[in-house]
Length: 460
Ligand SMILES: *Cc1c(COP(=O)(O)O)cnc(C)c1O
Image 1 (cartoon, rainbow, N blue to C red):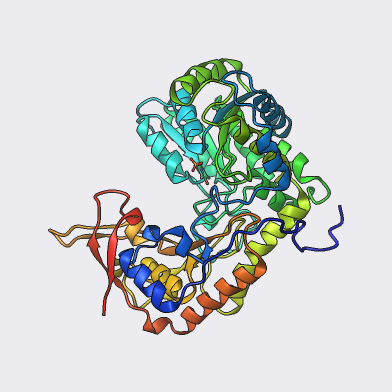
Image 2: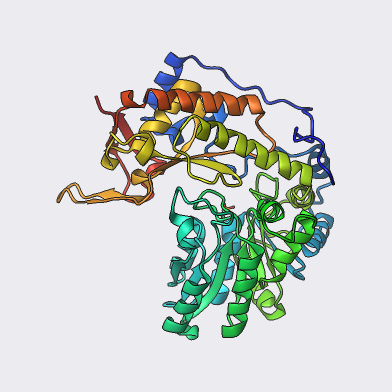
């Protein structure tokens, strides 16, 4: 369909009021939160860009569908609806509902990994990575080199390096590889897409060595939209057909519906192989629930069945990606060091270039997220030294995180362009007075996953 406008293809029927706070109130809130934005009550946030996961606005059809939820233990009608929709979109005959993405990953990794086995992918999302390790497996990120270069322009920076993939399989031996798992779009480097050509290449290698190949389909529709925009030969295909072709090359997928499912909770595992499905069913009953609801209520199954169809609507996808790019382009035009090119669901800011005067052991990403909240009530997410690095208090030795970024993830169908402009203005203002920003000192932290609960204090 010819798009005659990039305006949102929906209007607003229900509003969720936002609280306006003063700067001095935000200063108090920050102090009480120990300068860690994870500790701030969401009601005190004006524009919440912490994550795009589970934060989507549902449509009138999804809310109406919720009322048709059938809460029977076995065989509820909403399950049959969801199963039919997933089969139609993916082409996979066997579908297992889960309460979000990670239980699907847990089951998939149990099916394919044993201690010492490798799992190969472009970049494993953190929960997927953790589930591989949990089964004794070893995850290997084999994304193309451009995918790790924050300034390289490439249309498909989520692609796996096919040469690295094949070399790895040859060197380690096929028997030591449990599976290939490709994330579309690639979340870790900012929602960068994977090309159809690349997926076809992975299929060829998987066939050559007899390896199973799955997709992590959390953002499959955004990936399909980028293929339509950027890959020759796909400009006249529907996003739905493109998605179906993407799925056709894999043996199945895991899905966190909290992203492109346009729902607040949900997920699934879908498979081509009947034997694997039978095994997965047993694990599903053990870990999640009966095979026709998994971890979800009947009403949630219905909302997901509808959301999966709405997410493939091209005017929706056009306005979604346009809004993410609106933020990214406003920042780039003002000279703000954002990672290029802008991806599908977020804008990432490079704190090494934004705040070069703050050393990594003074947590520049957290210094920025605190200041951004203070300035405009915006919540972003720091992904740097606090999350991935560590400092030994005894020896004083520091392990540096290779990345020091702040992610501004855009929820789907939630904010207007005015909210986006509000955020852009605040980031640009901070960039102009970046010399005034000071580092942070760690006051308290747990031994692992410390960025979620750490207490910080600004240095003066
Ligand atoms: C969110 C996410 C997951 C995990 O899903 P949950 O629903 O949070 O359990 C897995 N992979 C990717 C790419 C994700 O973005």
